[in-house]
Image 1 (cartoon, rainbow, N blue to C red):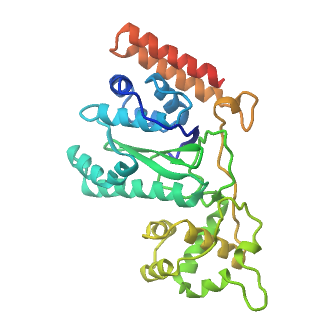
Image 2: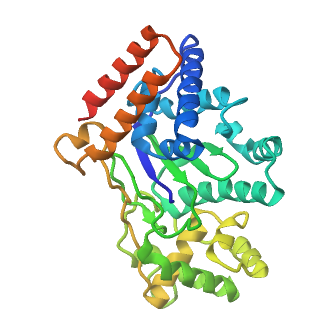
Image 3: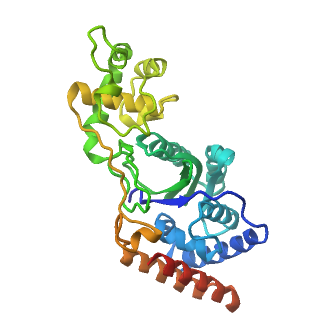
Length: 358
């Protein structure tokens, strides 16, 4: 079970209409209840971790199929709908609310009787998944939305980042490996050239970065400034995509703090306060320069979305998975307790969404 996907969406301004959200909440609650009753909590969480299914689900609830707001509004409707039933807890949200996720995990965990070590692991999961998508997959998208769905045994993270014109959604499902190729079902049209430190081939680079920290990091500064003999700086040395590298430098205070802590592994290094993109990136580049370890600028995209799938560019739509998601939702909607008029409306929206994508 791994981080299961990413979706890119156009960034739309504005808010969900006041009349729509109560309807979304009602439908989200009814559909979720049926799925949990008939298939169990694990299956419901598994479905939320699938970008295709999540997108179709948001459309069934009435939101625009290609809007970035589908993510925030669908997770918001689910958070309200699942407050008092089905055994799935929801923590987090958009902007300032996302920063309350740890406290909400504690409150919700106590409510459903989770042990303290399980609550602590969920808090770590929340923070680490955000760190990975913000700092290890440096794709130009800054996270602004983070939600953790969890039961007594399983969890899913749905989080979203933005750049100037697009939003990118990241899906996670329970995993014990946050570092080595965690994305198994990535879906987007917009291909970038990220500095990718979750590519499996850069494992040695991460190990070398940790070793650099365990020595005193003060000497690393020489790699970032021109020497008297006109030695190249890192920025000059590497042929790299420049859009995500406006500046290559090191925050030595944070690295010295990390040296004093002596992290046991790369995850512990990543979790140190202040260990952001520029330190992570600089350590990786120096590891490559000194030891020749591999780097990656590969965007971990596997499936295209919307119009990109029609002609197979950049990648063809996975019709098998997509059809399974659509069929599962249709079957679930038929079994819900909503009236026939509402069922007809949500099925029309689902069919319309499917027709636009394939």
